[in-house]
Image (cartoon, helix red, strand yellow):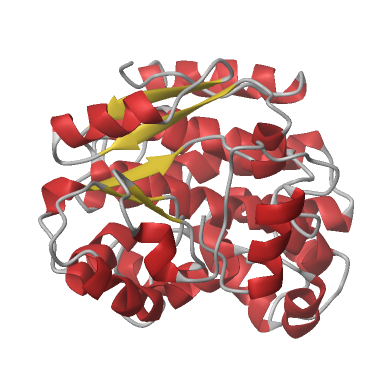
Length: 342
């Protein structure tokens, strides 16, 4: 592993601990760490990137010369879009590493780090435009408690991981305000509609948003106190200002940085995202958190159907059956969806 801070690399390498981010966890004895990029990358058969999305480009510039003669898969574990460009992480990787998109894979799903570190069973989806790359990464990224599925819908997989963070911030806000399960279930349901509309408008398959990278990750992120985005939203709901929330978080809440670029992309393709719009208003301080009710927002009193804008899910469609099952699971502790191909 590579760590930016020498003291963290030393703790992981010598003590097999990461006490700041994974308190109480003993890391595998065979794990090693360094703060020198060249040492971390040398001889690697696969390279996994887990860097805050807004800092990834500058770090990739340092990695590029180390991989210039390599054809190994590069795997993104990041769930954000670049604020300045609106690009997904796989697109930033392709630009900065000058590599074939077929070498790039993305991993997503209901994967809260502390639960994985505690070896609690979960699943993820590995996506690449190359089936061969997706399969190769999935074969490595699995063990007795972690299962990897695969698909080739990189757009849907990445946007699922990005958009669920924004809905999780909304859930955190209403939780911080003190609203109950009806409000949260309504936002989760309508949030998945917004996620699906947005992703499909950019070329994703709507089925991907019903799988691990969409619905599965949405459930885990919205219902867990371990979620950084949920925690950030809860602080906002309790009345903390945006700057104060950032200071209190010792890890990056990707949803906070992704709100503005996602809304800009949504406007470009004509997708309405009332939940995300109201999250931005709370972040900007122009809306009282207690007034957030985006699932109730309409332009007028004309009754509206539940269909998504892309028309893929009517009232009796598979998406709504998935939602009904998911909300039942949510109320009983939640389990991830497993709609992606093993």
